[in-house]
Amino acid sequence: MMIKMKGLIFFIMALCIPGQAYAEWHEASSDNFLVIADQNEKDTREFAERLERFHTAMYYILGRETQKVSPSNRVTIYVVRSTSDVRKLSRDKSGFVLGFYQPRAGGSVAFTARVESDGADVSQSEQVLLHEYAHHVMHSTNQWSTPRWLSEGFAEFFSTARFEKKGGVGLGLPANHRAGELALAKNVPIQALLDASVYKEPRKGVYDEFYGRSWLLYHYLLLGGKRPRQLTNYQVALANGASESDAANTAFGDLNLLEKEMNGYLAQRRLKYIPIPGEKLKVGAISVRKMRDAEAAIMPVVLQSKRGVDSESAKTLLPQAQSIANGYPNDPFVLAALAEAEHDAGNHEVAVQIADKALAADPASVNAHVQKIFALSRLAEDSDEPDSAWTLVRKAVAALNKVEVDHPIPLIYYYRSMRLAGKDITEVAAQGLERALQLAPYDKNVRWELTQQLVVEEEYATAYQTLLPLANDPHNRGDDNPAIKLLAQIKQKWEQQPKAD
Image (tube, rainbow, N blue to C red; front, side, top):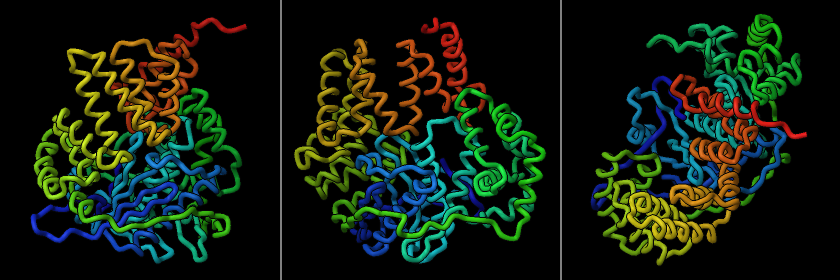
């Protein structure tokens, strides 16, 4: 997801010039984040600590226990020097992108420019990052269908955090960055806010108050004090299959009255927020290291690869990766990055060879394992001897599973190796795919695959609940969303299924 705001952005890419002194990169590793930053050790540590405080504060408010996740299920955040660098990574042509987050099973990433971590208030860039991370937390903790207003209202509510002294965090502060929007932008009536089928995208150049109204409604329902449990009742109705309109009318009653209350709430001189004292927020250990020269040298390639490339840009990036790797021929980090670049460029056999070389230097290199699985899978899809080719994939899957048990990629690709080879899906493979979605509930491809598997097993009720978030995707409400059609078919089969006594 990308957030657009006038005048600024959020992305990167440095040029790799032979003989140029490489930036001083540091890596901070914590329970929920891997921060890879082009800044000094002190700032890198403070930024990682700030992120962990925010994460813990969110879970505290949501009433969830924080659990240490498997390393590859953390969000990797790449911190670059400036918004100018961020722009070079972005393919957005508007010039208004402040930041982005890409959710992927085993590889969720976010990109940001340097953040000053010694002040209480968040900067504009940091606010965008917190907004995006709030989306990540929502999808990680909430299996219910999430309408667009709720998704954005939730993220806006948490993005206005304040980092208090003595380790405290304030959440739900006024969205002052939306004040102009709420005062001057095109109105979004409550019926359109709560029903995506009613909401119409504004004409080009006409900016509406959707984000601001979404924040206001979420803030009012959570902290207004006059509508207890209505937000929960609304989400339960959605989870049980109600339409957005029906869920809103059932939970909130007279929508015109709700809108009137919202407007009165906005007019108040002061709004509540939730201050959480530091003693309530337990942050785990954070380790910081200076990255090696080889890692710093290949970082421009890594940034582009992790941001994502198409076939054209992959072929442009590959010579740069090869040139850098020539200077560090035995470095496992560099070799893994080169294997990824070779795979992206379509050179799958070469990618396997380089990944093997990286693993010989460092058997625990997760990225090398992942790239080997990716490349072997592509080779197996086109192989004249699919049985032996898919066997190699399963061996690579087993190797990564030994390194990191809860990495979702082995679970996903073990299932795919059975399905694409035309084998009967074993219980182990099906359960592995289900576990992969538990680890990465934000991955749409995994959700789609599991839904199809559940349909094959005639588990229609579970399939319906699994697919519902895709069918109600607030950013894909058109007739071309295949999940909407499949959901209707599943519902029909579910209703026709004999009921157990």
